[in-house]
Image 1 (cartoon, rainbow, N blue to C red):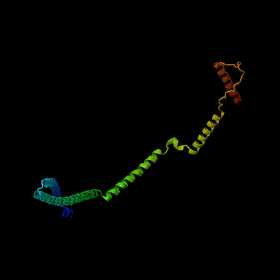
Image 2: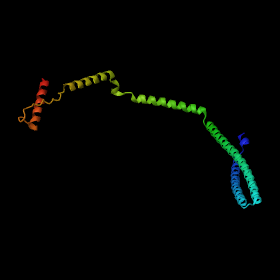
Image 3: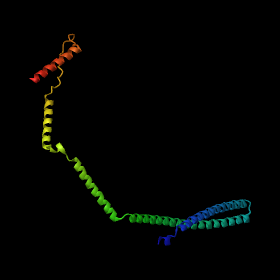
Image 4: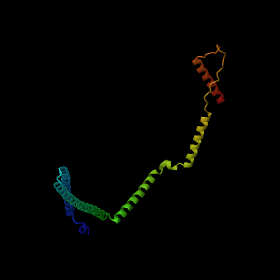
Amino acid sequence: MFTKIFGKPKQETNALATLDKLNETLEMLEKKEKVLLKKAAAEVEKAKEFTRAKNKRAAIQCLKRKRLYEQQVEQLGNFQLRIHDQMILLEGAKATTETVDALRTGAAAMKAMQKATNIDDVDKTMDEINEQTENMKMIQEALSTPIGAAADFDEDELEAELEELEGAELEEQLLQPATTAPSAPIHLPAGRQQVRPAAQQNKAEEDELAALQAEMAL
């Protein structure tokens, strides 16, 4: 049906050739129009010169020729308008033909794909995928199930033992000695401040820490 309406690809080639021909004709008419306009302008200049020379008859002849040129320009303008209309129609028909051809190609491709794909085959493939998925789940569950001695362990007992370990660790952290706070500095009068060597100060801090640990051990 589409072939009857829009023709065969050969007609599309003819349409392109026609558009090229119309473009050439349009360019030719535009060139002629420019020449006639120049001639009309030249006749006006001649009429002015004859008028200044008091040659009224010659000036009128120039104006007559100018009007003849203008009539030809108007006629060429009408020709160009018709060519433009024809080009617009051809370009629209060409676009329509290309659109229909693309739709026809798409429909044929879709038909071919549907013909190659059977709905029964699709259902069968989906059933096989579901079956393989279920089998894989069963295999993974079987592999994750404890075997041997690990299968006899009681999860509740393991949870209870873990809680005991966490409680013992917390208690041990609470019994650890805290860091000894630095003693408040003793302010002595000016000129009587004593500077204790760094080694003696570290030794005193170690002795205080040992004494504190001994008290906590009791």
